[in-house]
Image (cartoon, rainbow, N blue to C red; front, side):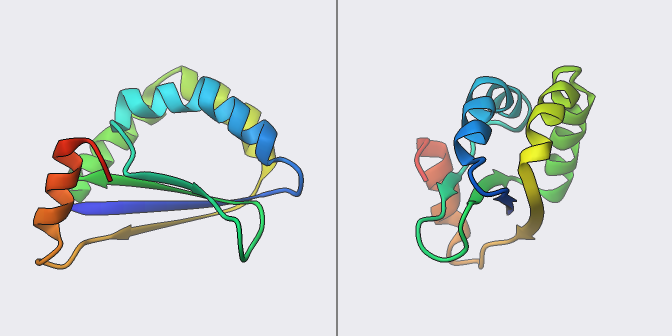
Length: 114
């Protein structure tokens, strides 16, 4: 099992616009291809305009397959063209849980709650 962390730093003042477009257009596409996310957060203290998504996958191969399907969806480039100018930078990390946490993570995902 792996967890992908995607961190987006947005341009000042662009969080509301980004979120409105994300919820209306991006999120349905992401859910269709990636499934339900593990977490989504907007930073309150520390670096400002930071948004973090967490997605869990059974394997790196599953992640690659799902992300390829997302990239092939004709709605994805249209969505990206709208929200990409609001993004200043992006970081992506793929992490694996230690053995003691993997069963907990799987149970949480199965129950539908992070």
